[in-house]
Length: 284
Ligand code: SF4
Ligand code: SF4
Image 1: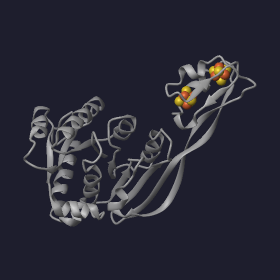
Image 2: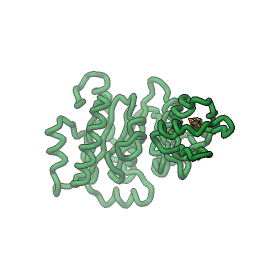
Image 3: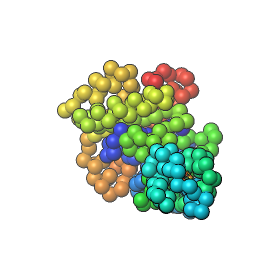
Image 4: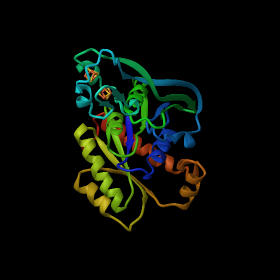
């Protein structure tokens, strides 16, 4: 299971994930876990044939049993409850379904009800079994959708996951259990800053990782220096290329615009397979 991640958006993470999947010489299970704005389907063009709702438990307060003690609001880390003198307000869109409030309530005044938070859509495109999550607009909790998507993973298949950008809970949920994390960055000061943060997350999770530098130029070399100093292998550099940029603008993956890139992506896959099989060492 390979997760493609980046400390920030716009580095080309989805481009890399899609190109890796399209270059593999085997069947791939592709999960677009960037559930706030899934867009790998634009490159991979799957035929989506199934749709499933994802829901979670949220609190439902029985005013007749409630003593308005305030304990539920105190324990809620997400401000999803507010206790007034004679009312308990709930904000379902903020609830992370941790269960703290209904477990703690001394009056057993809280029951649960289900709330739909998003969808999982799936289908296929050539050698790719494709799944994408979609978080409902205005909902703050994407990890349950990501968790539900990962439950569809089939053992012993090559799984490529497009993670959300950044380094918060949804990214950690996506990375957990991965055999390898591929960090995509760009050779800019911001790219370096966010790569350094993403690397901290990967190291806390203790997952082998490597880097792809996208839109590479010789103008800014600090990313490569950083990778060297941190024992972080640079597995591929994708040069700035007008043909790739024009193809991207039209929703065409880089490996279709420049078919010779497929071999480079296959080398990256082989390297990762070597690391996960214990044949090569890699950064932790
Ligand atoms: S913990 Fe239970 S009794 Fe106390 S305010 Fe919340 S719902 Fe009411
Ligand atoms: S389930 Fe957890 S997150 Fe949701 S309202 Fe209760 S304490 Fe807050």
